[in-house]
Image 1 (tube, rainbow, N blue to C red):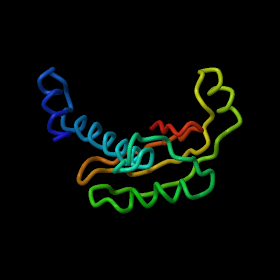
Image 2 (cartoon, rainbow, N blue to C red):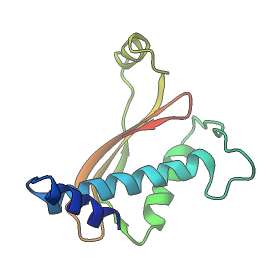
Image 3 (cartoon, rainbow, N blue to C red):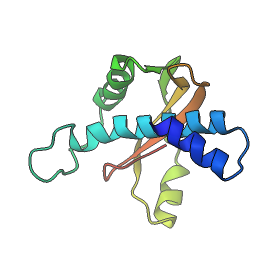
Length: 130
């Protein structure tokens, strides 16, 4: 339903490349839902809360497992990225929490959609930004 709705809205507004745009929106939403499953769990008991952030390789392995276990998702590579010393002052200047994990997903695709490269930044407060 997600890619169909996005394509219909794009066509209704007179947009171009609506098919490709619908795949991008659908893939982005799917990845956000995969990340949200880590944030609050798929079946919360009571009010959801942020989980404790694990600064070891467990977080990276969690993403690897989530991406690999989905029948609809394919990707070519998942690689950790270093957090440069320039990132911390920039985050403080913008009022954001400090980043603690960064990784790149190359060749990410949903079923037969085009492939995309995505960088995910995970912050100390539990937020993940793609």
